[in-house]
Length: 113
Length: 119
Image (cartoon, rainbow over all chains, first blue to last red; front, top):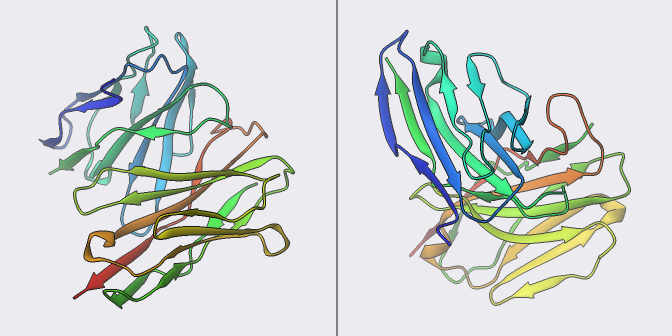
């Protein structure tokens, strides 16, 4: 198993540009989520999905869109990048329930100029 | 509501010292799970341990041990005979059975403790 994979590893955008952060898992996990990590703030939930076709907002969803057309993939779209979205983004997945361990991808370091 | 507090922002020790990282949590649920993750300088998040609220037995894995005390809502992590490779940010996290708006059964993280182990 490759586990949870993310691309790209690094990205620099200009304000107003859009882009998609890719996330995939090969563990047949139903639950997938996106977090952002900022200094001194731990990890905050952006969006999550409990299965293909089902997504919902987390704590900090503004400026981000997600979709889940397959079990494996959960892309995160930045609609119009802003400097406040400079962060490290982590995708994570778990089998199903809150009792299951959540596994994280390697992260994407995004800088918005 | 659920909350995780890691009051120690940064800890520095000399190699071979023992070190304990504190984690205090808040939840109204009786069924919950606690986790520790390690984030080395390379940046990835590595799962270390999962513990459910009904199992208060302490756990030991090599130089790592975890002390879960429901009476004080704490889930502390001790590294015995620390090594330079233990240098990382360590996160404590909590999830429970309650479905909340803006998160579902989300995993709530503390702000992390930066551990520096020096020679």
